[in-house]
Amino acid sequence: MGARGEGTIKAGDRETHLLYTNRALADAEAVMGKSVMGAINGGYEAMGITDLVTLLRAGMEAARRDTGEAGRVTMADAYDVMDAVGLAGVYTVVIRAVSDVISYVPNGADPNG
Image 1 (cartoon, one colour):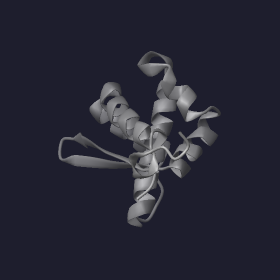
Image 2 (tube, rainbow, N blue to C red):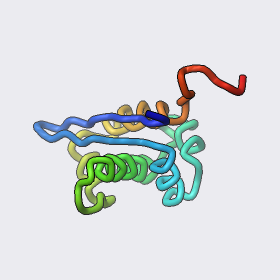
Image 3 (cartoon, rainbow, N blue to C red):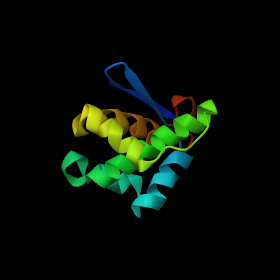
Image 4 (tube, rainbow, N blue to C red):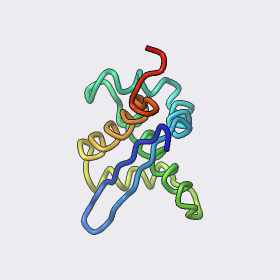
């Protein structure tokens, strides 16, 4: 299926689906003004809340587009999710899914090395 990372954040009976692709990561980079890899390489302490919410919103928006659901996901929507589950709950799911995209290699073997 290509470079995709998916995750689900559960808060009570609400589930928020996330989808990360190269396009979603590029969208987040455009808002953050820095690379996604630069934002996540510093770990939990180095990533600001705004960076994390930007990545969360990008994943929520990509999932919305993937399902064909109408509307757009806003930063306020992403903050609502973070407020419901906490910073650490969002961080864990987002970083795992983003890592799946960054580390993707077709058919599990690096054709370049």
